Amino acid sequence: MSRPPGDIIAAVATAPGRAGIGVLRVSGTSLVAFAESLSGRLPAPRMATLAVFRDGNGRPVDQGLLLYFPAPHSFTGEDVLELQGHGGPVVMQLLLSRCLELGARLAQPGEFSCRAYLNDKIDLVQAEAVADLIEAASAQAARSAMRSLSGDFSQAVQGVDAALIELRMLTEASLDFPDEEIDPLRDTDLIRRLTRLRSELTALLERSRQGRMLRTGLQVVLAGAPNVGKSSLLNQLAGEERAIVTEVAGTTRDALRETINVAGIPLHIVDTAGLRETEDRLEKIGIERSWREIERADVVLQMVVAGIGMAEAEHEVAARLPEASARLILHNKCDLAGIAPHRVEQDGQVHIWLSALNGAGIALLHDELLRIAGWRDHGEGVFLARERHLEALEAAARHLEIAMGELTQLELCAEELRHAHEELCRITGEFTPDDLLGEIFSRFCVGK
View 1 (tube, one colour):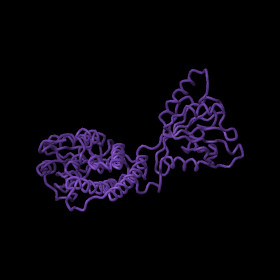
View 2 (cartoon, rainbow, N blue to C red):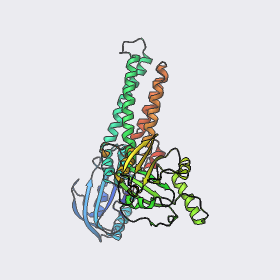
View 3 (cartoon, rainbow, N blue to C red):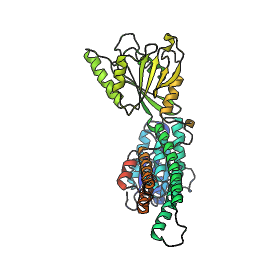
View 4 (tube, rainbow, N blue to C red):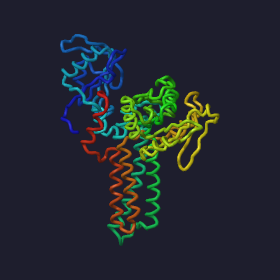
């Protein structure tokens, strides 16, 4: 991730297309001469200044605001120029070309955020939160991303890590100086500290798992025989007519997808072809695709008809459902059967009676999906975690678990504590290899 001295980067920071305002960013070392060549003067630091942006022959290209943020008081920690001009694509391209003529190069995706990280302006979690805030698909996701960008997630990780470091210090001191008066770590004290540490890490992991749902959502697949109401349920959940509903069996031939938000969690609903034996070639292809969708599902909603319930065919379908997926049995058309919407748990399996036609019982389904997602408190206090964050937290938890089993072998216990500490440091970027940094920042927007 190293770069040559004096390396200047530039990029358009606003989305492509026409707009009232377009923003172009420049970051590098000593941009005083750069700004003077571009606008004829250097503006006062951190003040918006009206300027005329000129090409190499001194001809005006655009007029707008120029802001100058001298190092180290800028987003990247370097000198930063921000040009706010008219948002036409031609104008933005002319300004970018002029910056390249003055010695800048086109920034790579995420390079501004990467420089901020490398210059210790933000940690890796905060850098990732920049991208998460831009990509947020709901208000809850945006609020959680903002908490991470403000440092809440980093502080929570560092709080657990600080307790871990203290425990490591006492454990290794007891090994290095067994005969010295250094407040030796007693077995009961070690157990107490480890137990509290595991509890704090478990709570952090739970909040992070909930936050992951804000980013990825739940893959929810509707499965069942033809005419049980899968397409009607999709329409009811989506709030509009997304699927064709008829009394003809096999109407749905291919998977239909719709994303909805419930309490801020994206639910990716997939309506599939009815599962049955058929000689129709096209319907067979649809059924094969249905099973592929089911294999990838986080939750399978197996639909049956209220008053009839699970017949032999439904039990055969249930036997084929993947064990890794959660399963709900929805008894649809409860209004026709004269049964009020309700939820029952039998032998560890949740059954919900509802009507996809009039929406009765849909709130029960929403609540159950949120329960499966582990959702609490409507998202307040959760962290918009990424997969690598969860992997590191889970690895740290495993090392603490092993450490608990090695209390009689203090050397092995200390080694597991060291591994747990390294995993937590990977989250904020203290021990993150360069190839992983490249992978993380390559997914950012150009200009960020």
